[in-house]
Amino acid sequence: MLFGETGNPMNVLTTAPAAIAVDVGKSFDGRAVLDGLDVAVARGEFVALLGASGSGKTTLLRILAGLEAASAGEVLVPDVRTVVYQEPRLVASMRVCRNVVLGLPRATATRAAAADALREVGLEKQADAWPGTLSGGEAQRVALARALVREPELLLLDEPFAALDALTRLKMQDLVADLCARHRPGVLLVTHDVEEAVLLADRVLVLRDGRICLHVNVDLPRPRRIGGETFDALRDRLLAELGVHREAGAS
Image (cartoon, rainbow, N blue to C red; front, side, top):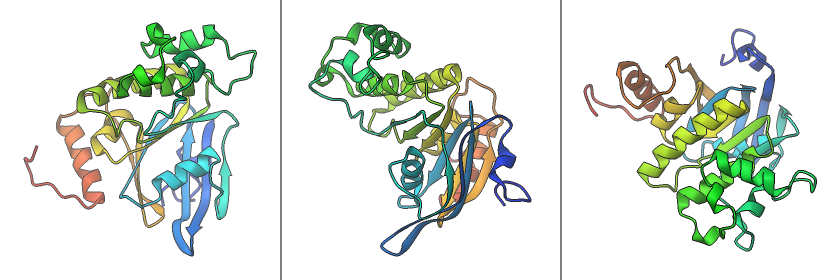
């Protein structure tokens, strides 16, 4: 079983939980997308979720975000949780600083709060810019600042780097790793990129047939870089679980 002999997701947690899903099911038009799924994320832990297209990764994320209701099972999540999507989803008619604090209570939706959040993502000089003037990487950094300014206990990342070019993606991965280590939310990253999962996560889960079929701890020192015997072996194991088999020595 994924969570030890008892099957209890709490068994994987060494600190307080940020999210727990127990025996969760979700069906669409009679088709089970999630079927008895168990997942737990601890506060301060970074978990990556892999799976083929249509395996239910985003469905699980939406359930944890409160955007979908589970058909069965139990879901426990904190009140303060935020989502960063593949698209930045900025409001074009609002300047960057207003986008960052959008939806916060008036008492905390201050320019100072926006400035602090933008400084963390290296965009303090863009506070008064319009979203349409930003590059893709800059817009996604604003979305990240908007998520973190709320000091979430659970941060949900839905393929947030998929639309970025390769160089910007690497920079964003480093930024997310640094910010999550600093703020210490529980993090669930949904991604198709196996190397990204190994690069960022404390644990990697593989979703298949509505359940977690593989659970792997990533015991690599940080900061991490792609490559090396241990990294490559873990990447190839995860790829094989996803149905991609590499020849020995392939780069």
